Length: 367
Image 1 (cartoon, one colour):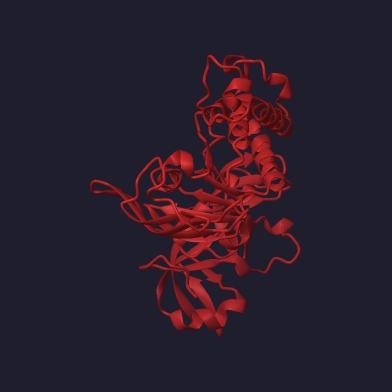
Image 2 (cartoon, rainbow, N blue to C red):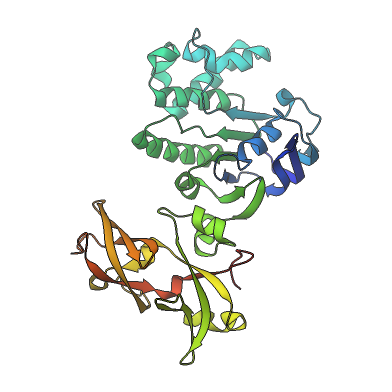
């Protein structure tokens, strides 16, 4: 087992900077997820650690050893690819054993490792089959099993669930989380799916345009995003944003949008007071907008918004309501008992304790 350290790592492809001055320390046995939109540099960061790309600058360490000049096969890592990369002419057993055979591992040891890994993954009955006889989920398990048998210091996952259907993705991400708990190894996992990141990670590193935006636990990223990008990327559906000005009104700080006023959290009044008069961007998560008839207990409902209902999506346990507030589009997640209808003009209750404020110029969270 080992920790992983990126120290001021940069990777460029000509004029394109894929990874820009990345510094992350991954603790031993941690489950770190690198998340961000396509092209943000997360897969490149993983490939640099695996040795599949060379760094332009900075250093990467596994444990106490700098591995910049170490061959991929000698880095004590195992990687699970998006495409599974199984040999079609080999059985499941031979696919899982292939890397060990190349290392001239004794046959008895190979069999023991393959059988043990197959039992962990529940694929022991598939060892004699070939990949074409397997479902997508079974192929994914074989690819993970091939990594397990190597007993590496660090497991690397490059969007391993993206080829699975929605139901199987949910099932398999739970299996990978259980696998991490069982193996007690360091996992570094790349995905563009923030739901995967939130449900699996010990910590999440959010990237955009090759730059690390924020790294912290899933709950901290959700509750206290450092900037607009993180706020909009973490959470599904995405946070609602709008323009406004922070003003003083009747002894309280409010967000004046020109067509409505929103209260701000009483707990943050002192922190926000130094920003009075500034143009700001406010953010409200859909789950903090409610049908006034069904406000959850403990919600600080001190502001309401008048809106027109454009679209409603029934989700069973909740309803997504797409709203038009003047020229502003917003989405609310409301109680399924709501009687809202498309075309209605409605009042929306706002949880003011969870309204986020951002500097309009820097897009950083107001402190």
